Image (cartoon, rainbow, N blue to C red):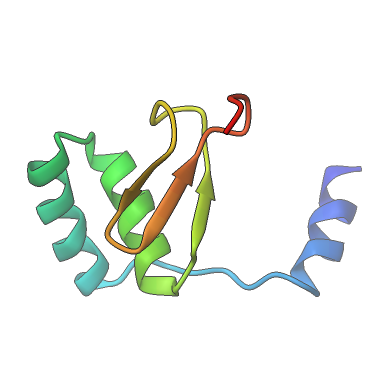
Amino acid sequence: MAFEEIGALRRVWSTVTPDWNALDLAGRLQQRFSLSFWDALLIATGVQAGARRLYSEDFGGCRTIESLEIVNPFEEA
């Protein structure tokens, strides 16, 4: 069941909630990189949390925004 899996993940993963600093960064990223609000917020929250890599097929190819490397797991490097 999905909630049992989530319970197991809670023991090894932490979650991050965007704060005002992440929202400010998201606004700057949205303008600078022509991102949607939600994409910018996802990236800003990752940067703020200290994530090094984001796996997503939504950003096209491999690129780096701020300190976050964005990798499409379905493309060959």
